[in-house]
Length: 114
Image (cartoon, rainbow, N blue to C red; front, side, top):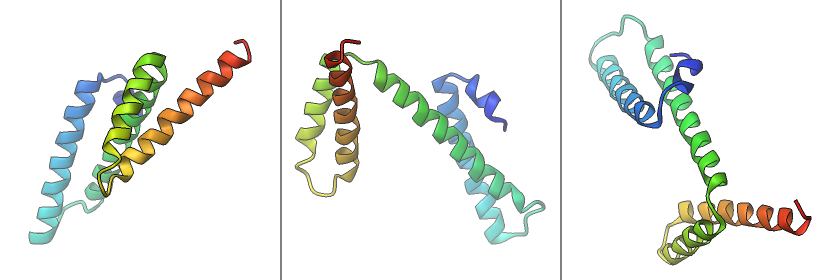
């Protein structure tokens, strides 16, 4: 699957393609364990497709994060900080750092008069 084809897909289509590709990879791994695959490189191709799709999803998520308002950014940050008290929540800590970085960049832009 080409990256240009993936870029033309909507978010919902991309999510469905990811699910289908993950199912296909599971089937390939199952076949690999039980029988011989006709083309062993299919596993590698499926893994690369999954990585491409996840990369595009992440890029879109970051673009959407840049577009949210300051008030919504503060609300999300407060919600994440409430969840950080639970043990083993490294994912929330990284999200907080990202949101704080965006907040600081916006504050610096406003301070410089842009």
